[in-house]
Image 1 (cartoon, helix red, strand yellow):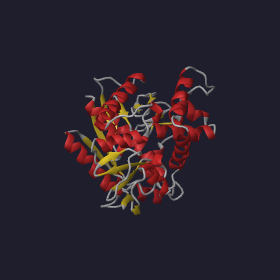
Image 2 (cartoon, one colour; image 1 turned 120 degrees about the horizontal axis):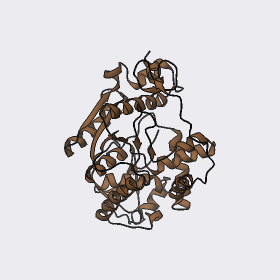
Image 3 (tube, each protein chain N blue to C red; image 1 turned 60 degrees about the horizontal axis):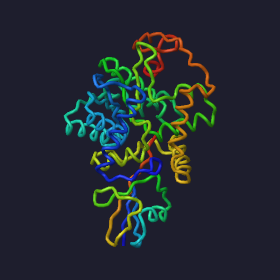
Image 4 (cartoon, rainbow over the protein chains, first blue to last red; image 1 turned 135 degrees about the horizontal axis):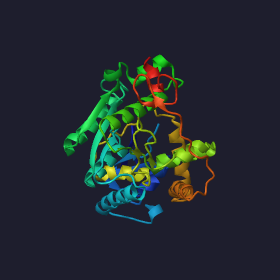
Length: 63
Length: 291
C-alpha cells in the first residue's frame, strides 16, 4: 500500500496510480499541494509504488 | 511549469528560478547590486526562499523578523522565529528581530483583544503593526528598499478581489514596486511577483530550506486563501490564467490602457508620537493602538 500524509491526516491507497490521481482521489486540489517522497520533490506524473510514503505539502498560504 | 511550457530537472529549476528573479528585479527597476536591502522574513517558504535567492545573487540583504506573540512560548510565532534564525545562522546572514510584546508591551493577540479591532480576528491589527515596524526598521537602518516575498498568487488574488469590487484606487496602486512617495515612507519591492506560489514552494523544498509548514492559526478562512483557491480552479482548467491575469494587468496599466484614477498624493504629516507619516490628525493609527 501507499501511505499519503497531509497535515495531520493520513491515508492508505493502492499503488500504481499517479501522484496526481492519488491527490484527486483524496479530494485535494493538485494545484494546491506538492508531493515529497524520501525528502525529494516528485512530479505529479510519478507512479506510486507499494511501500511508498508520500508527504503532501500545502502550497497556498495567506491571511 | 505549464504556463512557461517548461519541464526542468531540480538543478536546472534552481538555476532558472534565480535567473528569473534577477530578470524581474531588472525589468521593474527594483534595486541595484550596490543597494542594501531589508527582507521581511516570516519563517515561511516565500520569505526564506527570497532571502536565499537574493543572497545567491550577491545582494546585500539583511532580514527582519517580527515576533507577533501568536501561540505563546512554544506556538506558531516561536516556531517561525526559530526557522528564520536557523536560516540566518546557517548562511551567515544578519537577522533583526523586533518582538512586539517586549518592544511595545502586548502581543498581537492581546492587542487585538484589548482594542476590539478586527471582529475577533487579529489580522487587521497584525497588518497595521507589521507595516509600521517594517517601515521604521527599513528607514532607521538606511536600507534602499524593503523586499517582501509576495508571489504571483498573492498579487493575482488581490487583483481579483479588487477587480470584483472595482476598487479602482487599490488597482491604481497595485505594483511590483511601491515607491517611497514621502521621506518617511520606505520603498517596497516584490521580486517574486512573477513566480507562482508552487514555484516558490518547490524552490524551498528542492533547496532544502527548513521553513514552517504550518499556516498562521488565524489565517483559516482568510479571504486571500478563498480567492487563491478560486484562481487555482481556473488555473487547473486553463494553465497560465493567473500569469496572464496579473502580468497583462501590469502591461495594460503601464501603457495607460486602463482608466484608473490618478494617484493623488495624500496630505501626510508626521505623527505627533512616532514621527511616521500619517493622514490622521495627531497620532497615526499605530500609535492610537497603544494610547
